[in-house]
Each structure stands twice: as structure tokens, then as C-alpha cells.
Picture (cartoon, rainbow, N blue to C red):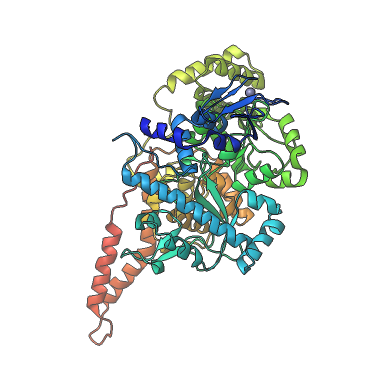
Length: 623
Ligand code: ZN
């Protein structure tokens, strides 16, 4: 944790007016040398909240809350002390000074500051384009209102923007402001044409012809963008196919540490209104538009532990509302143990009997009433897990039941609370109509056994080829594309490494798995992989959806996915390069003196092919 200098804190108290700080939240009226207003901390009809600007403190004679600028910001915005100091520094343009060696280095700090500033400017520029009478502005406003069916006022509230198809305006606007070369290189808004000295011409906007959604951190600062593909997205855009493109990770943006709309939602949660976790940013905006203001969404990736710990800081109950399709269910099941580990109480919103529930459409059609109905039918964490994992348990074989039970035990074990565990086990017993003592006994056995290592179903094999085939990696299909697709879905961290060893030309796109693999590798290459639970934007047909869903539902029992992936790539490489190699061998063998073919170049090509075929494929492990 960076330590802020005490002199800096004293200085801020002198320079920042308490009345200015409080006036953002409460209306104050002058009363002599003091100010009075309705208390922002408790409900009241006559003002008992007093502010003394000279002394720099406030006190409520109703509820007793009192403090200075820092306590006020901490309590109303749910920030830590140093976050409150930084937020105030940002708001009143006061540079924060850190103790020597305790904070980020001077360069890092000023780069971060520049990046925050640059993102505000960019968000403004995109928003102005959205509002402007220009082809891009007209189109995006129509798209917002007619295609997405959102209110224009909502675009103002979330500062929705438009990136024109050919945008030199943003480059020029940022260039004029004299940002450092480092800030322009690292902000993630541009592709840089060459590595030489930076010029206006070298900056090519990453986002073109897209609807721009500013992403704010929990302090409300714009740190990144999500860009929705539209008809204006140019075909030559390298990520043209991707429905959503995110800013890459930057010094101020880490996808796994950020939840969309948390800056607003955290001030809305209370005992009767917990957080609602939805899948996409536009889902969260839809919730907001109907008055469900505590919705947050992960940043185009699966939910992470860090995000849940962040949520836990503000409120301990979260209602999970994902798509009711199989990917959504799968995501919910993965979310559950993480939520328990983070100490969150999770509930699951679902509609009984509904085939498919899409949060966006549901709220669009029926508004807040739909939420009330969902809430009535919501399930506790373990009831949801039982329902999902024990579906059809009446007809299931004992082996299937014991596998489902193991899944449930894994979830139970994620909670550190004995009380929570006991409650869960009782509920499972109830579900299975078994005596609670039997379930408790089974759980103890499971828990003791899985103390250090998880039981594995397949013994590791020394032969990579047989490993590849017997790994449990899907049975009916045998193409390497199919296997690699399966691996990047279940071991997502493998994807990036695979892109380094697998050129697109080697992928056979004549079948479904190859088409999908090719598309996914492209996303991963551009750092736009949305995470396996958010593939909707990348899936185009129902066949594709079916294939992905069946793969996602499978429980992988793979010991060394990196090794298996390397074997798959090796097979594709052979398939791609060996025919040419054989042809060269034949040509060289049958070469006649009068041939026009140059043997030297053939030999060179053969050497190169042999080198490529022998090149080791070093994929990092995923453990
Ligand atoms: Zn009060």
C-alpha cells in the first residue's frame, strides 16, 4: 500500500472546502457562520446535519455521524482512507505525495495520472461524436435508440460514445494536449504503426465504427472502453469479426480487478437491495434504466476472485443473474465456490419453467416487475447447485450420483464457515432424501482425502500421442482443431501461448471446430478473448453454440493440458507442411538437367520446412 505523506494530507484539508465536498451529495444552506442540511447518513425531514467550514468538520445531531473531508468521502463512497485522499486529489487537482519508497515510482505515478486524464479526454471526444450531427453520430444515436432500445438520457448518464469509422479526430485531439509518448503508447487506444519516434501518422485508432462504452473503476474514473461492433465497423479492422472489443490491459486497467458499474452500484446497495451480478455491460445498463441500480458486470471475462473480494468490501450479498442457457449455468457454477471463498452470500435469480431468460430482453419487456418475480423464485447457493448438479438424479446411475455429489462437496468445501457448511450438507441430504449423517460422513471422507491434491481419474502417460487420445478430451471427434478448441475452453490460460506456435494457415477451417478455433485464436491474439463464459458475441450459429455448450459441460480430466495442446499443434503442423516437403523430395529426385526449377531454392525450402517441423513447441503449464 502506498503511504501518503502527512504533510500532503494536512495541505489538502487546508485547500479543499468541506462545503464543496459535501455539496456533491447533500444540499446545504448557510446558517450564520455554519451550514445546515438534511443528513446524507440517515433519513430525516428537518435538517440536523451541521457543517463548520472554518473548523473543517461536520456533525449530525440526529445520528451522531461526524468527521472531516476524508471521513465524508470514505463513508459516502465506501473508499479506503488512501483511496479517499486520492479521489479528492483527483477531483480538486491536487497532486498526491507519497512517502519515499512506499508508493509507486514518480514515473509510474505521473504515467497513471496521465492515463486517467487521457481517458477522460477520449471519453469526452467519443461522447461529443455520439451527440454530433455527423454520419457517425446520427448512426450511433439511431443504433442506441432503435436497435438497443435505450433511452437517449441513458447515453448521457453513461457517457456513451461513438468511434467514427475513420477517426483521425481523436488522435489530433490527444496529440494537441502534449501527452508523453509513453502515455500514448500505453493507453491502449491505438495501434502503433512502427517502433520509431512517435508521430500523429503512426497512431491508428484501435476502435473504429463502434459504439463506445466507457469503463470506470470503482472510484468512477474512466480507465478503459468496451466497443460494440456495428454496421459502421470497417471490414479492414483486424478485429472486425468481434462483437465486443475491449481496451487491452494497461497500467490503469486490469480486467480481472474491475466490475462494470461498481462505482455507481456500490452507493445503491443496502440490506433490501443487494448487488446483482449480470453478464454484460449492456445488461447492467438495462438494469439501471429500469431502476435496478445495483447491477454490476464482469469485464468481458469470467468472474474472478479479486472482483468478488472487491464486491465484498461494499456488501455481502450478491444475486447472480446470468443467461439461463448452458454457458450461463456453467458460469454460475464456477462463480459459486469463488463467492463462498470470498465470504459472499450468493443467491441465484431464475424463472421457473422459462426456457431461456435473457436479462436484457426480460427487463426491457417487463421492467422492474420482472426483477420482483425473479427474486421471489430465487435460489440459495446450495439449492441452485443441487438443482443444477443433481438434475435427473432419480434416473442416474450410482456412479453419476457420486460424481454429482463430489461436485457439490467441492462447493461446500469452498466455504470456510462451519455453520454454512453444515447448512449446505443438510440441504443436500434433504434433496437426495438421505439421512444427514450419511452425507456428513461422505463429506468428511471427501474433505480429508482432497486435503492436498484432487483425485485424478487418469494416470499420466509417458507417450504424448496416447496421452492426446486417451486424455478424455472429447471422444467422437478426432481432429486436432476439436481438441485444441476444447483445451482453450477449459484451460484458458493456454490460449495466448498457443497463438505463438499456431499460424492461422495451419488451422483447417473446413469444419465447425476449425472455424471456431480460428476465430477464437484471433480474439486471443488481439487480447480480446472475452472468457469462455462470455462467448455469445463470438458465436454465430446454433450449431456453433451446441458444440461449445457440449464442450463446456464436459468435466476435463487432463493432467498436462500444455503437453496435449503441443501434441495437437504438432499434428496440425505435420499436416500443413509435410505434403509440400514430400513434393520437394519428389521434384529433387526426378530433376532433369533441362528442368527450369532451381534446385538450390528447393533445397533451401526443404531445409526451412525441416527446421519448422523440428521446432519445439514449448507451451507453459497451466497449473
Ligand atoms: Zn444523520
